Length: 509
Image (cartoon, rainbow, N blue to C red; front, side):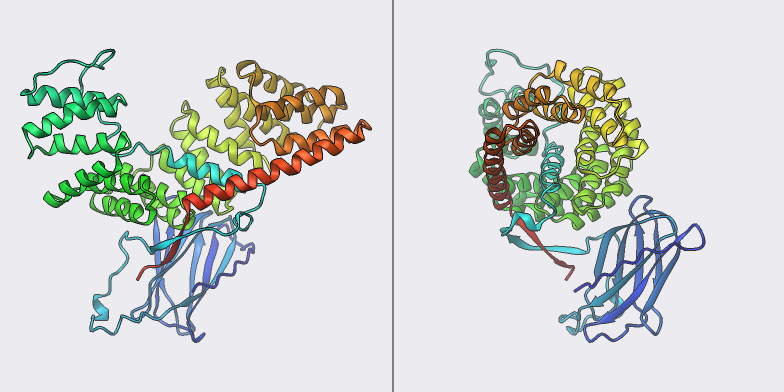
């Protein structure tokens, strides 16, 4: 078990310090334990050993996000983090190591595995979260859940992005001679590429019938089964291929099948196997996203961190790091990752949208965020969300100021593009209330209720406005509707979390 205490002090010099003490289960200091400090942003690693008092220290530590790892023969390896350090900050971590019960099996301690880039965690199972309220605050939890799901959706899945090079098939399906292997395979793969998996199956089945030993045809057919929702035949096809030869893409595809079958533990192990066999950007992202989806936030950070070291320009891995950091309440670090993603692809709307979700629940608005959303509006003036998030940035940056014109203009632009954006109506109603235009606020807030699923906040704000207007009965009714919507929203989140489950994580055995 890890016992973690964190102190924030200001060092005299510009560099920070990470230090602490390593003890065994009996609280005795452990000398000569090897300790590593991994900079997840820069990919650098420092190493040291504990002294006779079990103490370790890293000096001159730059502001960044780190993982700390400890190895001692006869004990289970452990990892702590990720955790953020600020400039000139000192963090103290008190660590307790568990004895490795299997270490007496005759294995030479000198042969104990040194850390390479293998994960320092194991997915031991999955549990049904018993209480939504126990995972983050009521304000931030819906955003954390949404970010995890949307991050996972960035994965393309096995073979989905592969292009056969053929022209897109539109309209009626072509007739192909039953004995023409090449043409059946070509048409089947093109239909699969363009999202017509069910149509592709008949051609790919014919190709496999003609050449049962052709790997490409059999693999494409397995993908078609998986994408068409035929889990049973997809499972059989992949297992049959794995019996012939083991490839990373087969493990990745089997992981997709296992996830669709509701077997997340088996799925994450297959994603891990694929990434270990072939640490491609796609495989590492899929592994990290699966961990994040099932609330294994720190392990997800570890996997995305490795992905970032190998593929520092990958936008979706940066988004994954941002989402994982936010899930652990490391908001500033989350924003740094997302801003880095924006820097890699300034015209890609995705990272801005992720940053926007973080921004809505953040307590402060750094200047860099405002500049990012201003750039978003400039690059994509027809994107309603760009205007909405810029308005939110202005609201947070100028909190308490009486100049509403620019915020209101951005919200009106968002609604002109998307007249059904409930979030924008809610912000407009709050702005009107702040200006003292209560009747106008009511109109906007009613629109927010109309266009927002489970509009608990819109009902709450309407109740407040009616109360100010002296409309007691209307205020009471809106308060009741708020309670009903809040209960339904919590029940919805509980159902979703129960369906996903939460990974049980242990230290590396």
